Length: 112
Image (tube, rainbow, N blue to C red; front, side):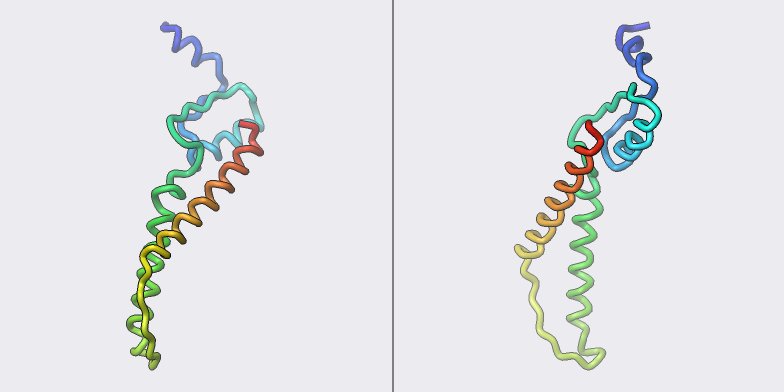
């Protein structure tokens, strides 16, 4: 048995990854044991909020709203509209920062 194998046997639980699932696993595991290890390569927060689901959902929502506006004449509305891409991206970045702050606040409560 290698030295690494022996060191890993010292823990009751090893969690791989500190994203949403890893943090949730830690939250539950720490109720039963303090003898755990989290292995993580990268930020301790949700990938979804930083670069995945959330930014794409905001962009999809924006596109859907624009589509509705562009077709508002179907329900008797006369509307002119324009997309300010810079403002849309600022909105995405603001939401990402907010989620990052909340994620860091949450992690601080876990004493990680």
